[in-house]
Length: 126
Image 1 (tube, one colour):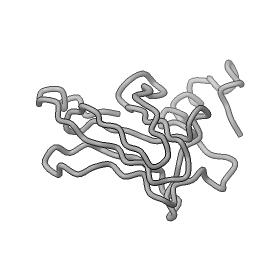
Image 2 (cartoon, rainbow, N blue to C red; image 1 turned 120 degrees about the horizontal axis):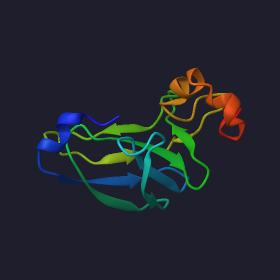
Image 3 (spheres, rainbow, N blue to C red; image 1 turned 180 degrees about the horizontal axis):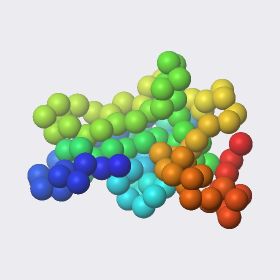
Image 4 (cartoon, one colour; image 1 turned 90 degrees about the vertical axis):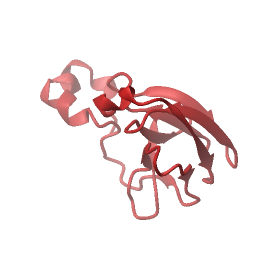
């Protein structure tokens, strides 16, 4: 989730550049429990955002909320740092995980502990 202190500093613009072979949805992790959709970035294109230092973003394949991972099987995520001033590049090798069973959201473990898998099984994707 976003750093609560992040909102005390002014917003700064950063750019997401999509070098992957997938249309990508960019979510702000500080929104609701499952993230807030900020934009869709087409293949080979870019999109600029306003963000506060500490804001966290993650990337999914467009329309299906399937997380994208880099070649080292690490989820494609970005924590905005105004001091770095660099762009967020979705790498060429970004792709859905080859593991068919994984948590799609950072709140999955909390939701499972609350019994949400039983009360709302449609949200559990395996």
